[in-house]
Picture 1 (spheres, rainbow, N blue to C red):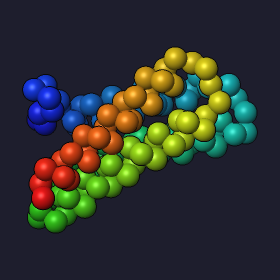
Picture 2: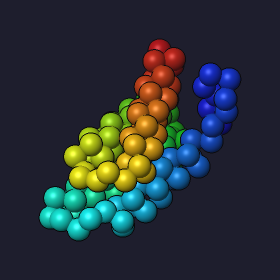
Picture 3: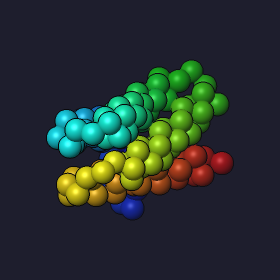
Picture 4: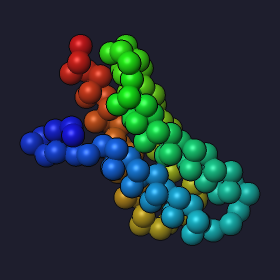
Length: 115
């Protein structure tokens, strides 16, 4: 559990839910060449956030842990990038953008607070 602003978060669960929501969102996108390609990238990066967080929790050293957390931050930022490119006026896009930003900030704070 990570505590931020007095709130506790189960980041494994939260990152899993982020990836699931991203997949649901991609499934309902208007089918265009651009959305299909950007959607594929979003699915990859959103899933990678959680997968790398699991790897971080199983790391054998602090150095490995922080490398994985930095990758989590990078993948969350990349998810924001793909979301911004996707052509959709679905309100779920804004929810996902907000969550990607929050995850980026959380992983950034983990790295900063450890130094």
